[in-house]
Structures are given as structure tokens and as C-alpha cells.
Image (cartoon, rainbow, N blue to C red; front, top):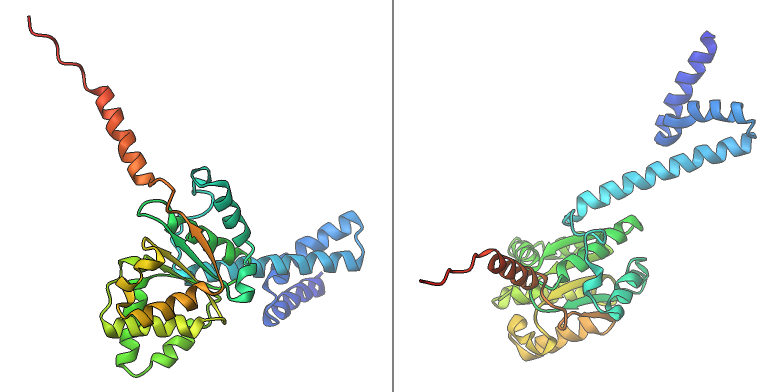
Length: 266
């Protein structure tokens, strides 16, 4: 009995040292199950390895989600997909697998404020993490300031290398950024560095003909659009109704219905 307990403890410690935490956690319970169900040694080992794989996948997903900065509530579960045209829904469904990342394809969601651009790309980001890809969510303003600070400290190449470890970087609200020349240059440098190597997902309320408001210089604007659009999927949401406007209209009508009519004077 004593030797059995020692072996159990030693096996647990050995599996932990080998970084097989899943096996260490489940080997005893699975051994009892194997004995009860008459499983072969091979079947027992298979179940044990499968538990280890599942635990590693869960830990990886948790770690990637924590590092991503993605808004936790913006998933496909909370996205009202029926608001989008069928073609747009199909595009988003195809993005879930992450296959576009293998070819460094970009995704640009274009639409008016309040149509769900940020929610849609964040939902895709969550699916990419489940599939095992590393994702970074950031506002364009925050990224530009991060790169600008690195440039001032003469460490821009090192900062770009840090960002390079992400398979996909999501730039939210690029249309709201009004850069000076230094800010414009670091944003262009970032896009140029990832061109044909790593994917970016961008949300914007500006159609491409208005991107001169971001990059100011016409040649830089054309070069930026070329790098972003060359290999890309465009999620055109310009025709989608703003859910915020729709909700405001609904609340306005509802309030009007609740207002009692003014009685006629005698």
C-alpha cells in the first residue's frame, strides 16, 4: 500500500516536471476508469494524452485572450448577425477559421458610426484566438502613440519586432485619427512592415477616397491604401443601418406612445 502511494506521488511529481500538468491532474482518475471499463493500455494512454492536449489548448486560449486586449463582450454570440446582408454574413463566417492569416490577407470594415464594425472584427478576433492565433486589439490612436514614443526613444525597430509576434493586429477607428507628419509616418511604417507578411484588421468610417484626411500627403495616402488593399477582404457596411440610431428612434417612438394626450378644453 505504501509503495503504491509513493509511486502515485512520484508519478505526479514526474509528470509535473515534464510539464505534463494535464496528465498529472487526470492520470489517477483515468486509471480507475480504465480498470473499471477494461480499457487497454493504449486506450488509457490515448485518453490521458487527449486530456493533456485539451488542458494546454484551454491555457493557450486564456493566455492569448488576456494578451489580446479584445473587448470581452464583443463576440459572435452578442453580435446581431441578422442586421447584416447575407453576403456580409458569409464573409464574416469565412473569416472565423483564420485561413486568411496564412496568406497575410488584411480585413477592412468600412461603415458609418454605429453599424457594428468594431463588434464584427472583435468577434472575428475572438474566433482567431480559439483557433490558436495571437491577436492584438488596439485603437489606432493608442498604437500611433506607442510607436511615436518608441521612435523618440530610438527603439522603433524593436517595437515593430514586438508587434510582429502577433498574427493579427486589429486597428480600431483609423478614421478618427488626425495625425501630424511624425504620427503619419510611424503609422505608414507599421503598415508597410506588415505588408505581405502579417495581417491587419482595420475599422474605419472613411471610404478610401477620404484617407487623405489620415495620411495628408497624396503619395503616402496612395501607398498606404495600396499596401492595405492589395491582399484584402473588404467588409462593406456603408449600407447597414446604425444600431445606435435605430435604438434611439425606437426609444423616441416608445416615449411618444407613453405621453398621455392633452384633453380638449371645454
